[in-house]
Length: 297
Image (cartoon, rainbow, N blue to C red; front, side, top):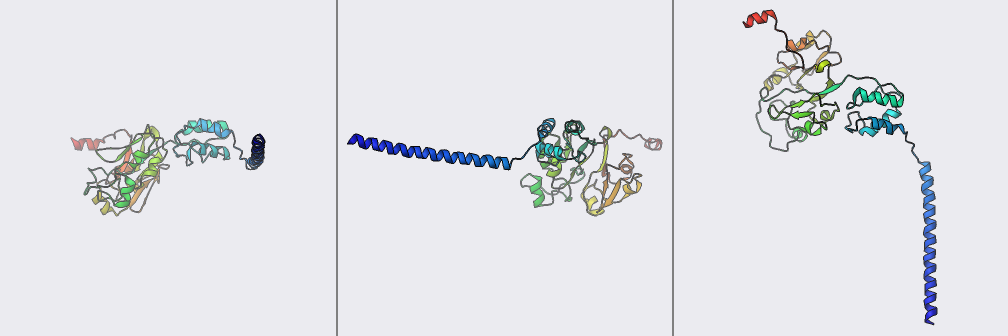
């Protein structure tokens, strides 16, 4: 009697287990079929050339191209009909030539660019009148007050640009408290441009032999206010505009701006600027005129 009960219990249990296994198997099979159909229906084809283009890129993933990383840029290159509006600032023209060769398209060569800091308001030229005692970040300080000087447009010097640079190309000078760019390291990725809350950093043509001219000021206050706040601020006098033979300079909102596409680096604007607000970078020393040499003697 006991043996029959045990046998009956065993058979019932096995039936339950067997039914459960069969049910699970059927559910699994149906789910697999559904997943297969869905995968086929919503399958997104990815061009294998995207992998090739990505491999040719410098893998900096800096976003300087305007896309989310090198993968996004590679995808855009493959899908675009032409490469004229696409450029990898880190890899430069050599990298774009490789990309063009892979895709059978033509890459447009671009002049190399470099970041420039449009502020020369060092302690010597722009005295500090108070001291900021908050979190040492430009973005935070910019939203709290105008700065430690009378110039509310100038550099705060807390180094958000330095922190943003993945190439160690920009450093805040501890003496002047103004960022300085290393031309050899700068890839023109634009990270520092985006990091500056004062909009003081911009990308400009590197120029032949690294020579370039730009207005080292962003102050849009009236001339006498700017001059009082900083010795080397642009006062919007328009003397540079009047003397430029290439129509490369515009003046608006009490501030001069030099278009690096039109500028021929003649330096006439530098000579007439009354506040030395126009910066000339990597030029050889000027030749002393005969009259000046005699006067100096």
